Length: 297
Image 1 (cartoon, rainbow, N blue to C red):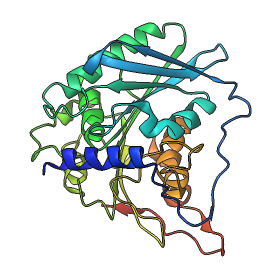
Image 2 (cartoon, rainbow, N blue to C red; image 1 turned 180 degrees about the vertical axis):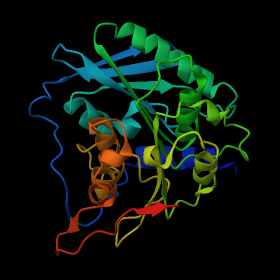
Image 3 (cartoon, rainbow, N blue to C red; image 1 turned 60 degrees about the horizontal axis):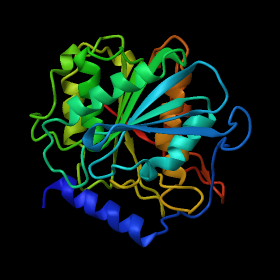
Image 4 (tube, helix red, strand yellow; image 1 turned 180 degrees about the horizontal axis):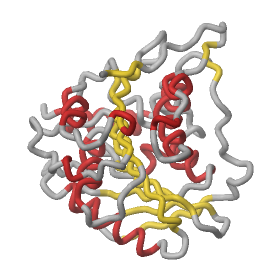
């Protein structure tokens, strides 16, 4: 079975079955869902089919950074990452969620083009609200699309790109010329040590294909499983805190935290980041540190 199809079917099964996948308690950072600056979330949907996109933004008027959040194969509805979306909006971020495919559409030739179209349209919709700081984050197939978008030049240059568990590029065929990503863009690639669907092949490939980005601006992080925290291909999903689905410390101290740090960087360079903070994963309730992320060189 093609990896993306397998992942998509598992995703659908999890949602329909309302499977609870919580780890045992860990000490996690405070996540802002309801207090200032979170004053409600405005949700808009535009377009149809594979050119549909959602915009989630704080209800309070203002100018905000934009995160383009690109879903994995078959995760065509925002509910698959809704807790992450709420976290970002709660921190004063506008989220654009492109639906680059129709459900179970296995043809990937237009995925990047559909995403680019959605980003251009959404930023046009946000005229006056977008503060010109763009970030792109993608999971699985979305991790491939995220780096492709940064290489295109038909959307604003992102400050940073976060590619989570990218795959399957079919040996690089689905990747565009990544040497066209501007050298001052920050690139973070993340993989999970228990990801048996996409593994790390495309993560390594993306790092190799971006020699123009200096070491101080790119990094490859391996998220490590620990006790009941399993860094598999589904671990970046964050369906909903309300329903207790697929949200745990791998989100709070892993995927979410890394993007938060990228957004808050001073000087737009990883050299200004605290590497202990970046790779740290919090502490179990018995005081033992959760296994840190590993920097792959």
